[in-house]
Image 1 (cartoon, rainbow, N blue to C red):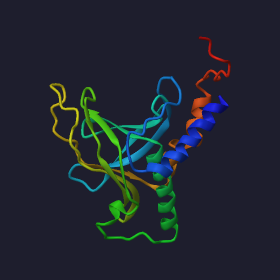
Image 2 (image 1 turned 60 degrees about the vertical axis):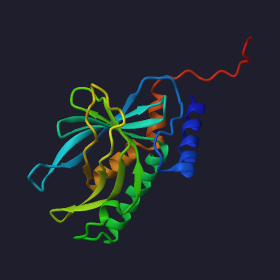
Image 3 (image 1 turned 90 degrees about the vertical axis):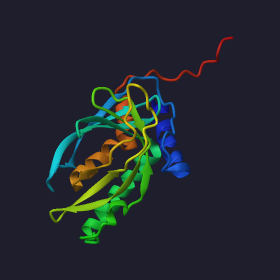
Length: 217
């Protein structure tokens, strides 16, 4: 089991250094079914209102491709956002940066340029109403936004072309939406997608130890 822990941690760091913002860096960790890391909460824009609608986000880990899924519902659709090691590490770092700027009163009110104050990542998004047949590679702007004078750490998921257009998925493109986190919610998400949480989850899956015996041929 210890070998799995070391492996996932090393891969986490190597991929962040080499290509932090590129999606689909699939690395095999273990041949097990996806499992839940926990649940978070975040706010989404309400129609015809400046209030936020609080919803649960399920955080799931797929060890076959080393991806964390953010599973949520918005605008009547089921949505999964996939985060690979580089995106996860960058998101954790930007959460810390936001907290530091919050504490030091450096956040800027009344600006429309803060939605990508902390950079841009690209990810995979699967969505649909009944089944999630549509797929896109949207960019996500990492930043913050003030709603009714209250600051929120934000992930602005941009519109992107549907690359899986079939008879069952004829939607031409995804829709834009923004996920809002207060500081506690952002810190909780950062913890859920961290290497420590993933490693702890792997330990609970009763993975067989890797054998060092010679192969017979």
